[in-house]
Structures are given as structure tokens and as C-alpha cells.
Image (cartoon, rainbow, N blue to C red):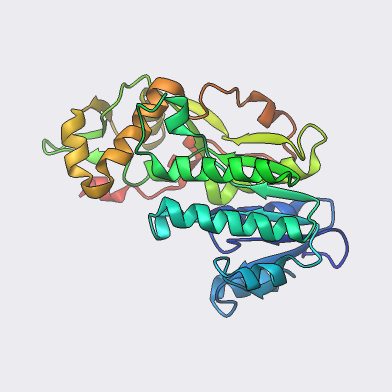
Length: 310
């Protein structure tokens, strides 16, 4: 890994200390092309921001919800990577407003390529049947807005975070002492997986550097696709612990999930009925990666599962 360059295009990375933005910085530092990386942080003094500075990144203070900050951040930039954090406030309206402001400022700055972390329009794809997956639909609305402005746009859609299957979606100890993944959808449901902090940046780098992508393209940032059944099987193979997949009643899952229960159920139902990317093929997005990406098995091997022994 080399330090950020003093030559090459200026790329502004929003969310540089987060999982996706941090991965983007790491991937660009690995590139054989020079980049001047401007890492945006609300608090440049925090350790994660200082770590970026030590690699030669220019850490810049900014709040993406403030238009005056955006104008300053994007001045002189050729490239912008942007991601918004729905979960910080759980408001689709705020996310859309923030996304629009970022796009407007980037367009006004004349950026050559705007790379956006979008997601699929679940409500539209499902014909309105699944209308509660707000964290997908709000990002899809931002994608639509970006396209309407004519800004040079590459959309890099992250797959389902494989790290979620180390946590809330993954194997859990059952009341009878057994281990199971218990979700309200079929075991044959296919999940498009991505380890965001390690691998997302590889796809952003591809969007920038590969002649197959660039402006007007969509990159499907998923390193592999497995059924839930296959994920449980591989988990057992790696850990040596027996585990099963259990399809549980929808009502039980929704009620246990509190205010997010219905949204999480509809998200999983979308995976089951339409596919994570609405039926799109992830193959072309794997074809010109300049660096390797990981697998579910590799994540399982390096994760701590000791809680299941208790």
C-alpha cells in the first residue's frame, strides 16, 4: 500500500472513516494509478481520521448536510465518492435531501465522475407489494435524481453485508441448545454478499479505472451469491459446529424486530422473490476487478463465534 499521491485526480471520499468509504480509500491506495485522496470527516481529530492522514490522505472537515461545506469540499475535485447513512436517522426524507444536496454541489463543481453508493428500488421492482424497505428505496430515489441532473454518474451498489450474518442475521443459539439461522424466508433464498469494509472499494476502483464502466454504468458490488442453505452449510464446514436453517413464521420475526421488523422482513422477502439486484447478473462486475475480493467462508474463518459456546 502506497501513500496518497500529490499527483493524479483529486477524489473526495465522503464517509471516509466508515465501512464503505474506508474501503474506497484502501482500494485507491492499492492502485497503481495516483490519486489525491481528500477524506471527509466531521471530526478530523478522531483516531480513524488520523490514520487516514498518516497514509497521506488529506483529511478535510465537513458536514455533508451543510451546503456551504459541500461547495468547499468539492472545489477543484475531479472525482467524488458519496454514500449516505440512512441508519443514522432512519428518515428517507432526510437521506434524499442530503443526497440531492451532495449531487447538486458536485454538479456545480464540475466533477468528471460522481460515484454513488446506490441500492435497488424495491417498491418499484415488486410492483408496490414491498413498500416498507425504506433504506433501499431512498437510495434508489437519489440514483434517479442523479440521473435526472445529467451529472457523469457511476452507481456502485453494495451487496448485502456479509458481516450482518456474523450478527443479527447469522447463526444463533436456540432454546434447545442447537445452532440455527432462523429467518422468515425459504432456505433457497439467494443472497448477494459483500464484506463492505474489505471489498467494497475494489468495485469503486473498477468503476473509475475499468473501460467497461465509468459514467453511465452500474457496478454490482457483490463478491459471491449463495443460498441461505449454502451459507449455513459452509459455516458448519469452517467452524466444525453443526447448524441448520430454520424458516420461521413471518409474524414471529416481525414482532421480534420491533419498529424495524416489517422493513427487515420485506427486505428478506425481496431477496427471496426478486433477487438482491432485481435479477441482474453480477458476472460483468467481477470481470475487471483489479484486486481480489473475499468469500463468506473466509469471513466465517476469521470471525469470533465463541458466543455460541456459552
